[in-house]
Image (cartoon, rainbow, N blue to C red; front, side, top):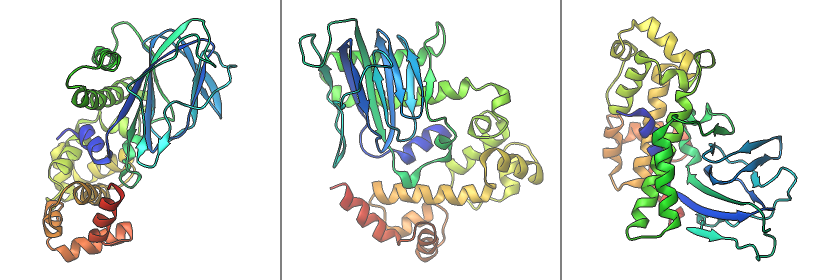
Length: 317
């Protein structure tokens, strides 16, 4: 089981959104917090990422910026350029992004200077299913363009930029798929770049630890199994005590605590995204009866699973 893909699939709701934008200096755009994660890719020119509580970050062609949690921020041609309201704003049903938006030099509020072309986008995440893996990421993940680094990420950026620039048959299927690929490549690139001294604990270290990733893969592959700490440790060739210490140090919670949490997170996804009966959901995540599952679910989330499903379905209609 690919743990990283599993984590993203559990958190994601709705469709990702994206836009390709050309602007001429001077320009500045504010991006309000979104219910999930946002990204920007600089395709042409240069600009600055502006934050209310941090120093501006210079961005050049090929740079990728990922904001894993809701954050008010802006992009501008210089740090001193005022920010105007964004062209992509939150709505009642989530984000609305145009497929393409051009700003000719004669448009009010746009200059006639050096052009910049950016990709911006957002992924909607369910806060109730937030995985600690994303919580380990910094507020801003900046991946500067460097020759020969992360060619898969660069290829995904090129493909997505091309699809958004020239709308063609199949774009409604291709663009969301490319956005999913881009997200995984961004996370891959960041985890790969973490030096050893910075990953003594946390998910970056866990995903690089063969014993821990073997145990996590077992949990994600078969959450219904009645795992013991000894069995999980054996997945990576560790004794019970050594495995328990290492898992807790890296993941931040004991193995069976994480197992229970992942079962409940999986239950949320099944209740929201499938029509499986409650007893089937219970069996798929390791509970012997619907009653035992309902008791555990209500203890975790404060509501019965059937009520949660009805509320989730109402919210999306």
